[in-house]
Amino acid sequence: MSAKHPTRPSTAADSKRARKRRNRDDPEAQSKEDPSAVLTVVLVPLNEKQIGRLGAHWGVVDVPKFLRALKQNNALELAGRPGDLQ
Image (cartoon, rainbow, N blue to C red; front, top):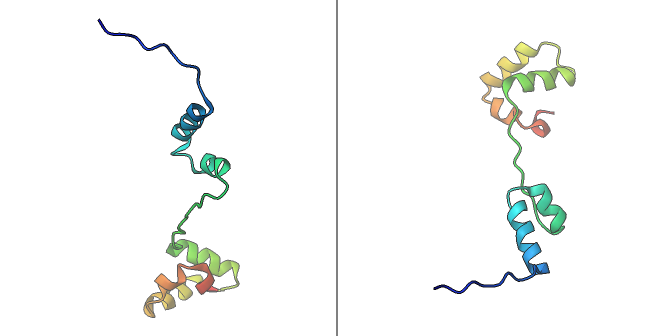
C-alpha cells in the first residue's frame, strides 16, 4: 500500500517556477520578468530587390544600372548592409 502525500499549499517559489516554465520560450515575457535580461537579435542583409528600393529612395535614378555596377564590383554583399549602402 502506498502512502499518499497531502497536497501542500502553493508557495511564491512554486508560482515563480510556473511562470518561468510558461515564459521560457517568450522573450518579451522574459524581459518583463527580468529587466536585466539581454535579447540578442541579428539583422538579415538586404536582398537585391530591397537594395534597389532603398537606392531609389536615396535618389538613385537608374536602379538596374546601379545594381549591375554593384555586381560587377563584387559589392552586392556589402550593399546588403544599409549603413554601408548609404
